[in-house]
Image (tube, rainbow, N blue to C red):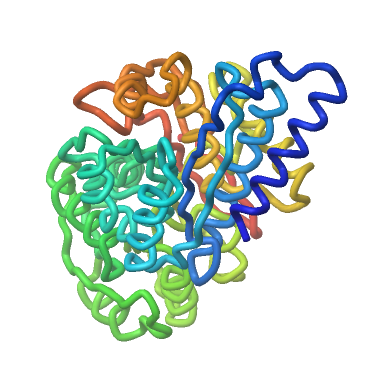
Amino acid sequence: MERKGSVLKKTLAIGMLILLGLYPAVGWSKDVYKIGGIFSITGPSSFLGDPEKKSLEMVVDKINAEGGIDGHMLEAVIYDTEGDPGKAVLAVNKLISKDNVLAIIGPSLTPTTLAVVPIVEKSQVPLISCAAGIKITEPVKPWVFKTAQSDVLAVAAIYEHMKKHGIKKVGIITVENAFGESGKEQLLAQAPKFGLEIVQQESFGAKDTDMTPQLTKLRSAQPDAVICWGTNPGPAVVAKNARQMNLNMPLYQSHGVASPKFIELAGDAADGILLPTGKILVAQQLPETDPQKAVLLDYINTFEKRFEMPVSGFGGYAYDAMHLLADALKGTEGDKQKIRDALEKITGKIGVTGVFNFTAQDHNGLGSDAFVMVKIEKGTWKLLNE
């Protein structure tokens, strides 16, 4: 279904260009560049995958409307993983062996990404993940890149904020999957550097509906603040339970909940929560001197006009991935090795997520300026400047 939709859009785009007399004279003689996409389009993580799918299609349509890349039109072949690592593996195998894609964008999640990394490495197909886990790109895998900010930077942003506000003792509660484990590792590893003590560690299952027992243990340890690390819906349950228990201390969340969906799920319990996020949620509040502001506003306006729904930073991961891939495709004539090598040399690329500077040692390419700290107030995001 997804593939048929992309083909139809591509055909219509070509038709319009022909009618307008704008299609390159060599266009019909050049092969179509097939780009794979695997996202959590349905299921509990659809708030990640749905905007990623829409953003990828939006960029592909724009590139095709402008004549493609070196005369090659693009075709997005997209499959839904439903957030299931097994289905992600099946989709990637299909993209490589049947669809013959040149590169793959996605998956949406750290567990699904880690499940497909061995396949793309063996097949030597460039993959640009939209997930955050640091293990995706550390240690560096030659064929794997990612656009989402890593949990290393997210933890540093939270701890820096805590340090400024005199917090010394911290309780943590993390989801029991690869994203949660990766975040937990960073929370434990970086705490001493910021003079923080982890006084209690708890965890929860991704489908748990009551975190009261874990929060009771955390409160007993008397931390100055609690950090929850996970993706919806679990963190929203933590927020609600903390409000019900009148947990009178700051509650921090990870960048994994930085979307309107979290506020929708948590309701009034979201108010007062602190978290690190990309700049998209507070783009209008950024100073004019911020190098990302123009890119952010253009993406927001284009996305919301086309899809008539609020934008999220998660869609920006796929938006950036396709723009990076488009730059890398130029001059390669579809040679996967040349595409990979070109990706690794991209520097100074201003995106929705941050400014990308890839190297042979860094396949994420983002710095600490890719995050800002925000506070949820009355159901919206407030940029913290302290």
